Length: 120
Image 1 (cartoon, rainbow, N blue to C red):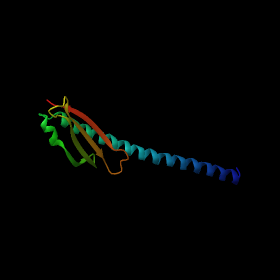
Image 2 (cartoon, rainbow, N blue to C red):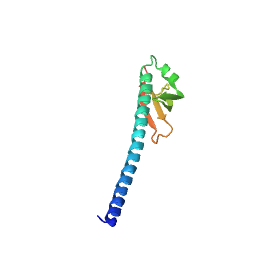
Image 3 (tube, one colour):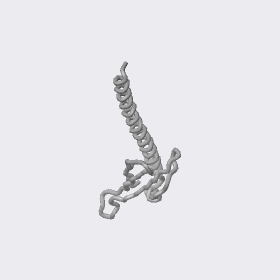
Image 4 (cartoon, rainbow, N blue to C red):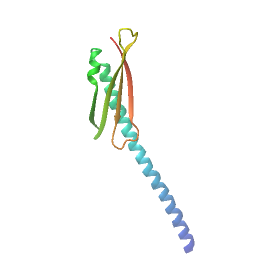
């Protein structure tokens, strides 16, 4: 082999290693984002389960809050909003729309889940 062939081979090998390194970095970042979003979905689903387990229609309003949840060694900001739809004397509908929003530092996507609770 000549010196020129060795240099060309080294340049090709360096290029391949750099491309693989970039791919690995992007894959690692995407993997951590997915982990954060999955955990945020679990937190939101747990809160909606708490909403569904309330014994009375009025107790749903007591779940309005903004809090920090430590889940899987990460802090998540959770906000629960309860909005009443209808319920007046002339309205034929009466339900509460509960929306749970969860986000974490470094998380690119904000997770939001909603459910409707009918008057009972």
